Image 1 (spheres, rainbow, N blue to C red):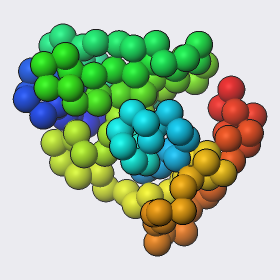
Image 2: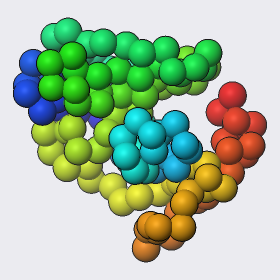
Image 3: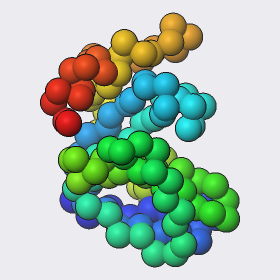
Length: 130
């Protein structure tokens, strides 16, 4: 499903092939990156217009951001060839509720979600997605 969106300042726009699902990652890296859980829409592909800075966060993943306003644009999984784009960046709110939570074993106690979701530990996530 083709969806569009942009960063906060509008200098970066994107079109993404979105999967209608919301996912949250509780890993320490995602929480460090955004100050809380990373709530994203998984996307099979994404095309970005404007300058994007890529950061090689690990051997398996890149993170992208707008160099002007600093908006976090994506998490890119190299083994899965998939993008996770923050839910709030889309022009229209995602049409799905939260369906999955990853790295549930790293989630701190100071927040929780009320939805029933599929929950994977870090080991389960790595085994499933590489």
